[in-house]
Amino acid sequence: MNIPEVKAAAFAMPLTSPAYPRGPYQFKNREFMVITYRTDPEALRSVVPEPLKFTKPLVKFEFIRMPDSTGFGDYTESGQIIPVSFRGVQGNYAHAMYLNDHPPIAAGRELWGFPKKLATARLETEIDTLVGTLDYGKVRIAKATMGFKHRAADSAQVLAALAEPNFLLKIIPHVDGSPRICELVRYYTTQLTLQGAWASPGSLELHPHALAPVSELPVLGIESAIHYIADLTLELGEVVHDYLAPIDGGPGRAE
Image (cartoon, rainbow, N blue to C red):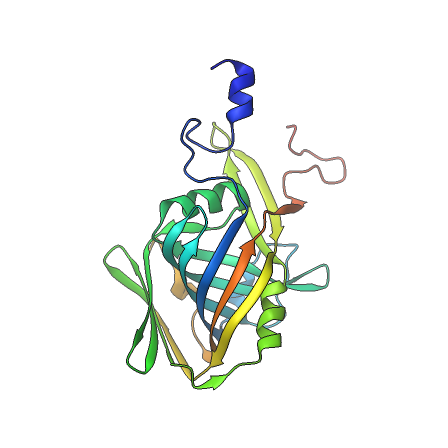
């Protein structure tokens, strides 16, 4: 391939067989179980990057079944999302994400900066209980339960939450190991169709792990548990803050 052909074909790695296709990325029958819990504000303060701010010491632990996602296939994901604000606008910061499918791991990290790692998440119904589990290798690091469809949730509130901006810290190293990209990225989910939403009693337990430290944002109390199913489109992102840009004439990306 000559240089113009390389430039024309370059989208993702490997060059001649990318790990994932070009978007848009649409999800059908995407099923969520979200346990919102109170945590230690000092622990949050140590992981939320400026210029994001958190106003309440809350974390959303999510289990998501994605049986029909264009380009990515059928997989399950789990992770911790922190409610934050950016320039006075409420949104959500993805702190940690674990899933069992390579294409969305590669695309998530390379395109948007999702903090994805390989693990095994499951979301299943066991008789009258919705159960989410997350295993890192053979080690159980999280388990959540909630009653199955006890009462209808506020659909408008769920849709409003899905429409909020989402934030990611995208880090791509240079070939010498120094940071080549370090950016705060914002993205939205659009074309939202809510098929149903339910609230129930919920529980969450987190276990220590050296390489999957979900328990470092400890559970101090459950605020809510919600289960919903939606169709949506995952839009591409935009950079809202460049951590490597020069500040007040000081050293930055060029150096």
